[in-house]
Image (cartoon, rainbow, N blue to C red; front, side, top):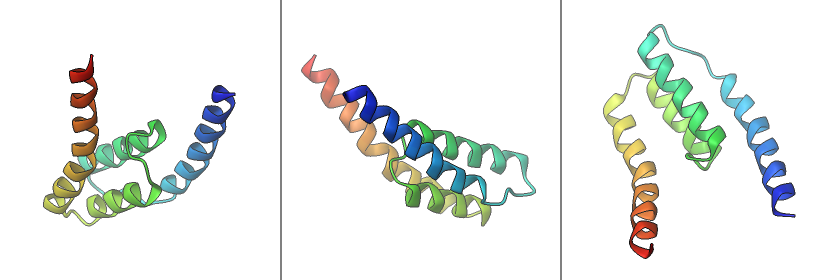
Length: 90
């Protein structure tokens, strides 16, 4: 039953990630790589919400890299803290 739920969630996530594909790329190949990474992180579930992924991509498109760094760090920080807690338990 858990696998059915997981596959249903990943199908929904993939459908929502297609919305991210509609966002325009930039004239910069390095920023386009960042956009691609954000999309992949959303598809894998590292970035949990579509709004967070869209926000990051918009910051990249607008070349607001300082704001991108701060926002990305806020997203990554809880994930890192969760891993550290799990490692302490084991």
